[in-house]
Length: 119
Image (cartoon, rainbow, N blue to C red; front, side):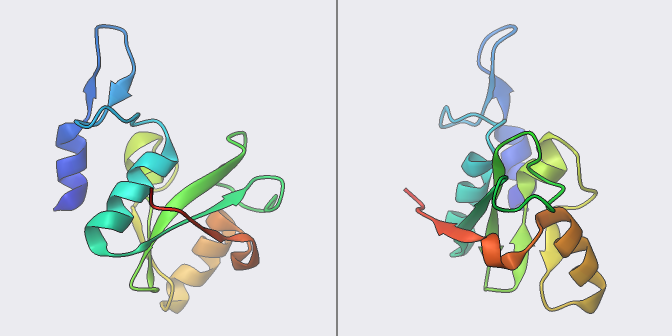
């Protein structure tokens, strides 16, 4: 599973240093893991600014949040689940009515979500 590969890749750059993926990018930056997920599964990197989306629980105090959308159906948020553990799972189904309220609470208004460059 890809999430386990990312977990296995993460390591401390030096004793007491920053945690990074094998490519040297920071584990603690939501954009980094979201970009990796989007590229791996042919999805989009999506994000919002905290000031534009004040109702979102994720990204408060972080100036916003980035995550991946796969097949225009699934939110995949490695950072939220595996790095800061603010959510209990990394994947939410945008077509599942059981996930609707959870997604709205965590990620706020879809109208504030913007596609971010994968570069």
